[in-house]
Length: 70
Image (cartoon, rainbow, N blue to C red; front, side, top):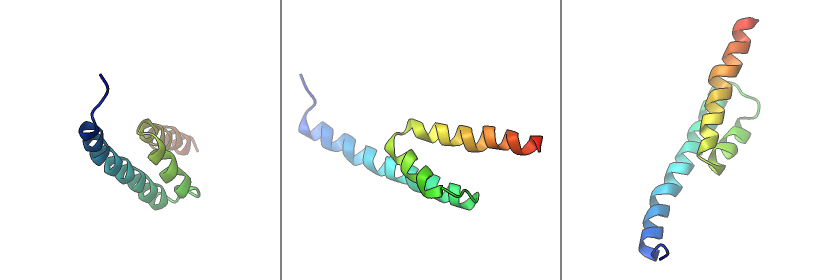
C-alpha cells in the first residue's frame, strides 16, 4: 500500500534539485535587490516550496508598496 522505493527515488531525484534551484534563485535575487539578510531568504525558501510565495509577496508587494508611500 505504501510507495515503492523506485517511485520514492524518482520523486526525490526531481524534487531535491527543484528545491535547491529555488533557494539559489531566491538567494541571488535577494542579494541583487540589496537585502541585508539575503542568506536568510535563500535558506528560508529552501525549507519549503510555499516559502517562495511568501518571499515574493513580501519583496514584490509589501515592500514595493511601502517604498511607494515614502
